[in-house]
Image 1 (cartoon, rainbow, N blue to C red):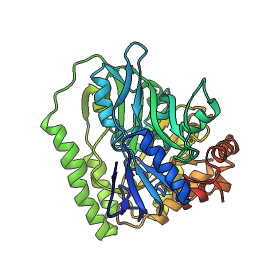
Image 2 (image 1 turned 30 degrees about the vertical axis):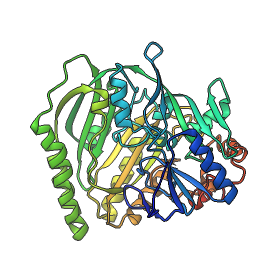
Image 3 (image 1 turned 90 degrees about the vertical axis):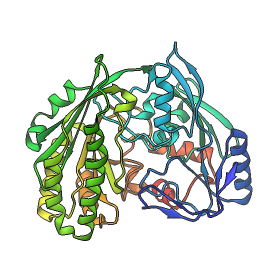
Image 4 (image 1 turned 180 degrees about the vertical axis):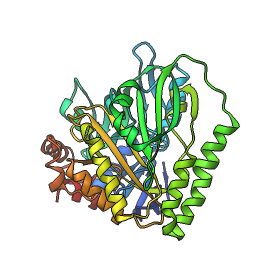
Length: 435
């Protein structure tokens, strides 16, 4: 087990920085137990970090940060039952490669694969598809170590209430060490990127959602330009990695966009022009490959993000209101707005709890003022009974959130039972859960 000497920690976007007392990287459940016991004795708090891709203060603490980077890999895999027990710190990218080597895959994923499996599940990470749930819905069993030092296994058949709470828990119930996943046979996807008109996209949104396994789109503010992305299972041979695809992904969508973003940061008045340039330059084309090689795209340009879950049937109405607001306020923003869809589920703190959902995400380039823009968008999201993505920026408090989640009180009962002294809490979580 290693311990950082400098004890400085920052998340990916730089929105959260802290100076914890110590940063521990245990390599076993026994080491985690020892850390928990020591922190409990010293009355010091613990927060666990996956890959630091959350934009909120989930991890920030002056106590102990635990990184699970040394807890990676497959503990067990059953190719007949199509299940795998995965160590909690395993990154989604490496997990996909391990599963593919066994001719298996996760049913669905988001568009970033650097997160740990436990971090992705704990914050409700999702992809898109009206018949598909978030990453957490793929979980069959969770092993966690509680504040009392108890190693607890929970599933639909064992400690079910705790299981439904632990599937999306923000790391407040204990330290997850293992996750058992329900998998599917490895599959290939045909990934089609097209340009579209926002009004046409919205007018045909039900068709796009129902006719494609995965459907999402990116709308560029101050324009009517949209990039639509569809993914569908195919038995065609994978396309060869081409220079043009590499050029598009790494040079245009990351390199050139970073240059344009820096221009917007220095001269915000250029945002509208840059958004129009981006809308005109979006890539089109077709790629075919195994799912684990298709879902994720490089994210080299850093940004801040707010994302909200709304009832799916409110997507068009909310997006039209967002367009009117952006145009009226002339917000200095050039990052596209991302729209994805998720099937309803039954996890206590899942934003998609008991409702088919649309997730709408707004972004602002790192270093640019974002609060005014985010506040205006959040006001619209609230109007439509929006629930914030747990890993993205928002201003909701425990009082507000308790009205949005039918199982909120049940979750808090479980949290208080498993962690009565708040070992796994920090100031941000107290505002979110208690105050």
